[in-house]
Length: 248
Image (cartoon, rainbow, N blue to C red; front, side, top):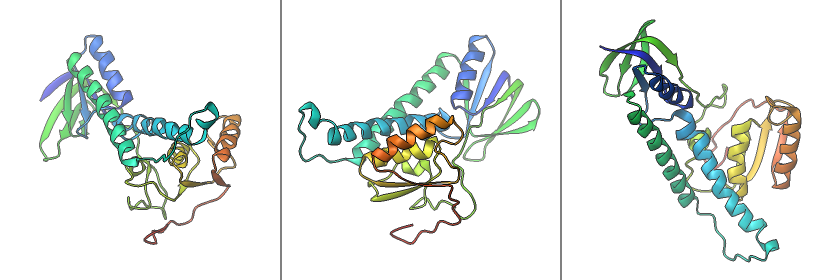
């Protein structure tokens, strides 16, 4: 059994930043992560990869729609989704490697596996092979992050009914994409593919886009997205989503 001043469950931005600060304050620190790479949802399947794809898709959109007015003529323009995904993966790898470097630099012990409480000061770490390790901590920080959410009747099959995680790794650009939910993630992934030529239709239960934010932001966002061809179904409740083979 290993004893620490602080044990942190989860290595996302909440977890790894806490770990670094604790180590800087002289506390013996351990961090637990169930996946093989550090960084959590944000670095692996959230903020960082989505921004990388937004960056690539913006370049394509500008080349398609805005370069001509600057006197830059581009012919035979194509969106290579395979290369965009590859670049995104490289950005993710570099960022996650940076977090690993910071853990090593600050002498933070990294334990790979699922953390669960034995009691209020003992955490059991179970790795992928079923091996268990016990850690004790004077303080324990829970930073377990987030997962894509869905409701009954719209369970993802990860083929055509997908979450934002699968949308980061599509092998081809869809002809049409329905986005359920007009929150930041739905509009973000919709923007990536909308710029690449996908017809995007957004279904939202609330009366405004980005319903958890200031109302004026949603209004401005709708104006921007309508200009690039987005369609919206506001105040609509999704009852069921079904994979029909070549369509949903």
